[in-house]
Length: 270
Image 1 (tube, one colour):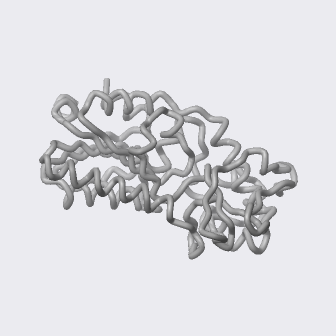
Image 2: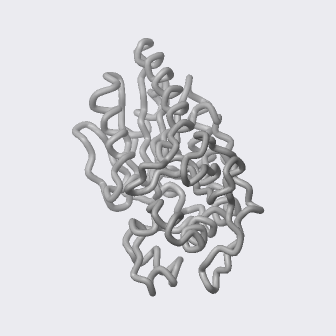
């Protein structure tokens, strides 16, 4: 571990890349495989619906009460849960360094809750804390209103659903789903431009970059690809540490801590 601690101490700039495993220790459900999903949502198990089936915009057109039962339950769970201590540990590290940025595929608002700078967060799949019209009306994205969603958990259907303030039709989360051609990416694009601008400045100044990836699996490998791209191609002065209990393969020269999010962060920064 001394070699890894030396890497952490030597870094001037930190990039945190986070997948779904980052939120598990906060009490957020792990949808890895059908077991975790069906344990959280028995009705989906009875219907033989997997996460990839539900994470599809077609349900907002074909069965909006079911779609909002799934996303509404997740929304209320996300706003009720507080980030685990690992978020605070990472923030403390970031604030000791010259600069930092967070890239996450999570849509749960946990980094914002943990007091990370909003201008330094890039949510590649959008956010459940923002809504849009199912038909992309006026390309408008607005802040989610908890009072606009009510779910009958026993029947697993929404009894109150948000609607577009412009056309009155059904709203949906501003989250990128599978087979999703209606996702409004304007908010994501603004965050990406901020990150690209920040990245150029770090590159120009030849800063020593440490990439810390937490809880990014291989099923939806977006975050793993971004981490490895940054390490292999983007920064010549970078180090890479992957924290993952299962998917432990790393590029040449990188390191892996084979633990879950909170435990791995604590060991990294002890």
